[in-house]
Amino acid sequence: MSLQGGNGPDRGAPGRTLSTARHVLQALEIIARHPRGIPIKALARQLNISLSSGYYLVSSMREQGFVEPSRAASGLYTLGPKFAELYRGYVAASLQPERLQPVLEELRDRASARAYAALWRDGDLEVVEIRGRRGSRELPDVTKGFRGAAHALALGKVYLCSLPKTQWPRYLKGPTYRRYTSATIATPEELTQHLRTVRDTGLAFDLQEFATGSCCIAVPVHRGADDLVASVGVSVPARRFTAERSSLIGVLREIAAEASAELSSAAADLQAPSRRAIPPSV
Image 1 (tube, rainbow, N blue to C red):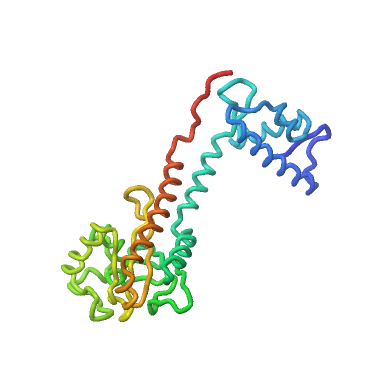
Image 2: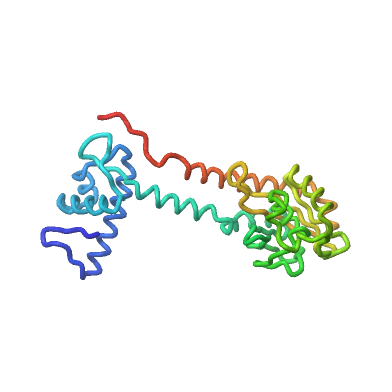
């Protein structure tokens, strides 16, 4: 896309190219401030370019779908359908569970505990982010990228209770499961019964089931009513869990609710009709 003045475009001059790019971006910002549309003459005046350059600019942006004629009145131009595509990409990126770092940092600070986020990837639990404080309890061997032990970790139980058994990992297909400690739930019957409570309460616990001396609490983060995005949780020493269980649960629920609300709002914006309502003619 190039601005052409009286002497035509100068494609070889870097300064010219940068100037053109600035004009394009500035033009889009100006057009965005006029939802009913703006005439090319007014756009060129605000950009301090010639009218002919304004026509070339709008024509180039129309070809790419960034600008379209306004349906409010002839001679006006508004943002085009290309922006709906770009916005979908922006929202999709903002909904990636890996972008829950701020949530974990707030959880870490408010709970004064090591905070974790996990996803269900390729048929198993995967820890994708960890935020910890010096001196906070760390689950041994559970680092970023850890996979497995879904039945022994609160993070995994959040997912297992929402999945049919046919989608559980292979290590949960047999008559018994691996025991990490003496407290690990190790049979399908026990786990199924336990997961009913997790599903009903929206709250999962690991009571020294993965590591002796460590307890974990985890909750789901949703996008919309049923779209489970991630599980987030904290790990603390067993003694602290006993003393502060209620307050830790409160912090987790509050932070997860806020994160779910933000993700749901972004998803609702994405699903809204991309076409603007037709304003009355002027």
